[in-house]
Image 1 (cartoon, rainbow, N blue to C red):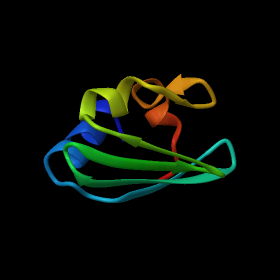
Image 2 (tube, rainbow, N blue to C red):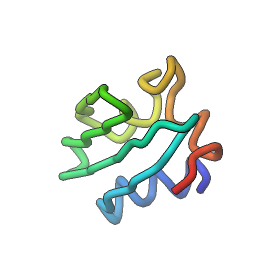
Image 3 (cartoon, one colour):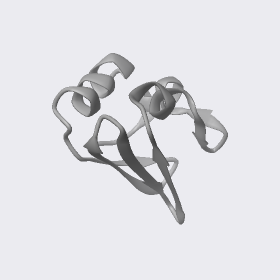
Length: 73
């Protein structure tokens, strides 16, 4: 999945996505465009916009837009 595809799934389709990155499971749960929950291992974070969700260095200090292509979905 590319960053553009992920943005579309979260922003338009509001689809939950389960993934694995570096052997750690995670999930992206967009309840709305302004309420996006992300869980990675034992960490959880909520974002109030799609831009914040894509750009916040939340997973191992990296933003989702830079590492999504390395996810196993």
